[in-house]
Amino acid sequence: MSPQKTRRLRWSDGVFAVLMLALAAVCVFLGSWQMQRLAEKEALIAAVDARLDAAPVPVPAPELWSGLDPEDYLFQPVTLTGAFRYTQTVTVFTSLADARGPYSGPGYWVVTPFALAEGGTVFVNRGFVPSQYQEAAIMGDLHGDDAGTVTIAGLFRAPETAGFMTPDPNMSDRIEWVRDPERLANMVDPALAPFAPFYVDLPAGAAGDLPQGGETVISFPNNHFGYALTWYGFAIVAVVMLGFWLWRQQRPATRP
Image (cartoon, rainbow, N blue to C red; front, side):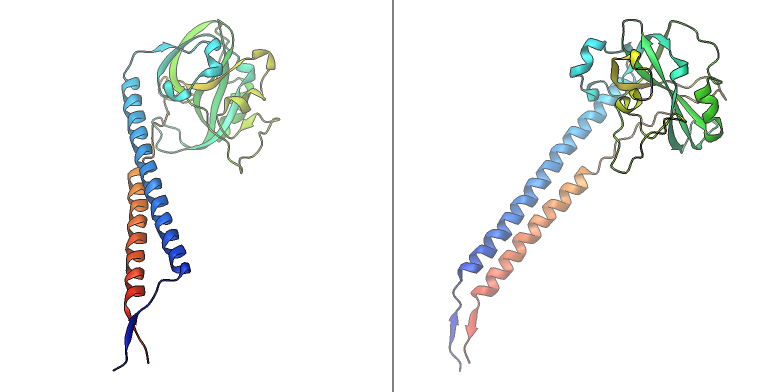
């Protein structure tokens, strides 16, 4: 019978074991981070639900804008007093699905600067128009006469972020691709500055009116729990694989 002996672990085996343990630790860390994000997301959803049913509050004053965290007011009903600057209207391309009003499909958000009575300007998303009404929106055919100073109410919205593939604005046709106040400010009269780092969505108007307001989508993708389970699963697999490998390395080797 051939003699057997236990194989000694080499230094490279130790390096491999350390790497596998490090991989497991990283996966546990990422899983725990996702669980933290889950708690934050659930807290945000609860806060938004509470705000939606709350009475409107005055929009944050211009002196607060520099240090404002938009998530503190996200979807909060707010009131604004001032005047629309209809001649400065910008349209933002979109494709509206699951519309509450009669119009949907490819079209534009009609975003108009609203000059506050106390100074500063907030961009107001007045609603959606189908593509064929884009020119009418920027030419002022959809707003009627300037009503002067008015008080309006809407939902506070955080700015949208442009991606690396987001096109530059079409300045000649006054078309943008994201509702980002910083980008929108480059398309209007600079005398309207300062500009708020947020925008406001108007509610629905009369049936069939354009722009078609009340199309705010309140949705929070929340896949953090699934991501956490995935990372924890990877950590378990790494530990099990390491244990199996160590067991194989320690099995008696048969010498011919």
